[in-house]
Amino acid sequence: MEQQGIGIHGAGLRAVQIVTVVLLGLKLLQLSTTGVFQDEAYYWMWSQHPSLSYFDHPPLNAWLLWLSSHIFGWNRFALRLPVALSVVADIVALWMIARRLDGTAWQGQFWLSVLLLLATPVFWLVTSLALPDYVLLATCLLSIAWFTRFFMDRAEGQAGRSADLYLAAIALGFAGLSKYNAAILAIGVGLYVIAVHRSLLREPRLYLAAAITLVMQAPVVYWNLTEGLASWEFILRGRHNGLRASYDGILGFAFGVLILISPFLFWPIVKFVAGREAVPGTWFARVTFVLSSLVILAVCLVTLVLPHWNLVAYLVLLPFLPRLMRPYWLIIGQTIWGLFYVVATIVNYGFLPISDVEQWRDEGTGWSYGWGPIAAAVEQAKTQHRIGFVAAPDYTTASLLGFYTHDAGVTSLSAARDEFDYWFDPEAHAGEDALLFDDNWRPMSSDITSHFTSVTPLVTLPVVVGGKELDVHRLYLASGYKPNG
Image (cartoon, rainbow, N blue to C red; front, side, top):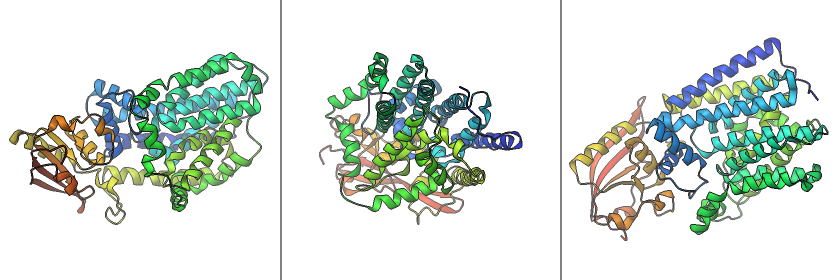
């Protein structure tokens, strides 16, 4: 059955297409010019130490960065290329969904969904940085595309193509290798099958599809079983220093949603959840949206939650948003909101910091600039001193210094557990001299300097951009490393 198009055509469609192309150009500008975010550098360092899985997250992002680095070298292009390719996958998934929803009248649905992908700050954020979220977004959207085709066919009285079911399961398996909250989509689809398509429970192909998704998680399961369930323990408790009753997280999460989703999507979201206009076969998206949002809301009651943690809810909403953007001024408002966020982000992190770094404690902006001089100072110090290793007080600055010095051996000496603990062997470096780096955001502590017989300042480099001091980088020569302090 061919579906009815969403009604954007002629001059309106051309305007949407023009703005979308402009946003795609701005996306390429951001990917190629903005400074490396600290967590991007962290995952890059993961990729230089291949493993079946990792402490913070499943491994797919690190695997992709490893492949990119071995093909294109150690540079920002290799870091961001997988992100750029994921945007292409996002667009392909949205095209597939639009073709299935609206048949030959797919252009309005497709172009508006791509515009909303690029003009909604949370999607812009996760498709601009080499964090696991960009992989989660692309793989989940592809899975949703194949699930939509499969379940719409069944809603129209057909059996549903097995190929669509298996491809959806494979994409979902890759999503699970990206971030753990991909499980919410799997649960949402499962609940939908039980509620609406119970006849599928008698078909072996459903269990084969589920088995495909589960078997794909074998590297993560094996790693956790051999590492004392370290990653699962960290996600469930360690990341939050233990769950505890606290309601402050709700206000922070709500403010983040206001900025990263925008007020112009609130009414369409209400219609998505409560309306009766869903295309038959797509109710699994509503089930998943509600499930993910309830889970995140529950977590908000006990700990601080970042808005993008509810990404699964936002991405199952995205393909169906074009049908809900009424009245049309909501599209205009969302586009303006998104363009403002996009331009501000590109300028702030790529050309000139526009935030008050000190007042807002904006370390991310501070760390976007000034790494060339300190990287050169590290290389010069290595030629003048017998250096065993290079270290920083925290995973953030250790990762950034490692990325900009092209040194996979840079480590964090933080007492808090992080991924560096899995490849840095303190006993193997006993007695060595080290270069220590710190800055205003992550200063050196006595807990770290006590591991050396002496610590001597070598270099102090202020980071000044546009007349504003963003940070101060410092380098020290530390002698006689003592692993046990």
